[in-house]
Image 1: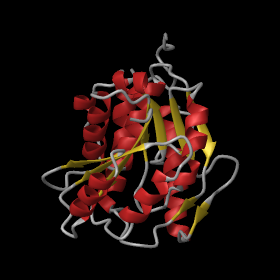
Image 2: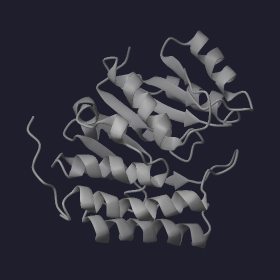
Image 3: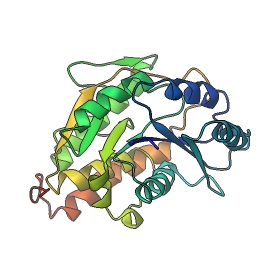
Length: 245
């Protein structure tokens, strides 16, 4: 078993999963892959099982129904914490996140509790997005910074690396958000504890296969979540305390 686990939630990703698994298998240093499949009707779960049967570093967690990104990741986190992984990563399975960036995350995580992949650190690095989508994303990032006080350029991004002890500090059963708000909530829970969070620049490419999971419901959930986080932090726009290792 490798020290790094990459969690990839899937729903109808049969076009992308074999290529992604092949790419991850070739990464220097080695990583394990956990596919969390929400009973995809296109047979993604079966393909994941076939890949896992051929490679002991690939694993599959089947869920009975599509129940949101947040629930999928929390299930994957719980699975990871039952094992001895030190670096636990989130990554999309559609190649919008470049798996070749994973070694950079692991390097940065040597001196951090959470590493965020940022599309907006030192400039905009987004490929194949319409202007409306880009403005929505950058506007959401600014909104989160203003309300919560978190200083990060890309709080809604989903390419991340958690250290084991950081995830252990979070009550996963108490996490209720699902869409982009899930990404905001997880980061905020660590930030308000005073844990060390760093950003590294990434290039984000809109998917070429399959369909985007973006919806109006996801957007509204994120808008409301930041106010809840502010209340949870006692209306503070700064961490409560610094973590003690």
